[in-house]
Amino acid sequence: MWKILTFIIAMPIIDLYILVKASKSMGFWTTVMLIIVTGIAGYYLARSEGKVVISSINRELSRGRIPSDDLLTGVSILIGGIFLVVPGILTDIIGITMILPGTRDLYKKYIKKKLEYKIRKGNSSLFLKW
Image (cartoon, rainbow, N blue to C red):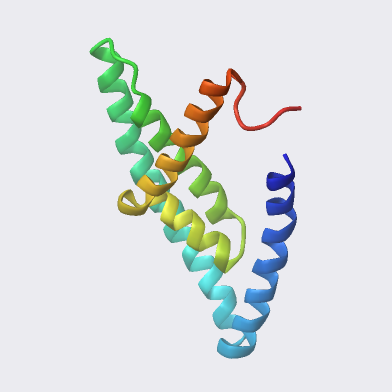
């Protein structure tokens, strides 16, 4: 829980710092345009990748199989899309890497490890305890 809370607090601070530095270096309007362009590009990328994953999930379900890997891919794309909506350069980088197929596998492996650890430990809840 503390890791997530620290991440939620630290991420906007780091993004704001990077945006201020970028604005000083590139100019205010260039930085604003960069944020807008990455947000739009990320939206379309998440949308197109999401459609591929949804069709793959539907195909697996029609064959009577549980699409475990496709579900992890879908979760990665969903979280990546959320990161792309949040303005900031660091969140955009994380979001894009969660959506692109090559780098998305790193996040999927991490999520799988976390889930396997929780299952071995006997904790069937996901990452958060409320």
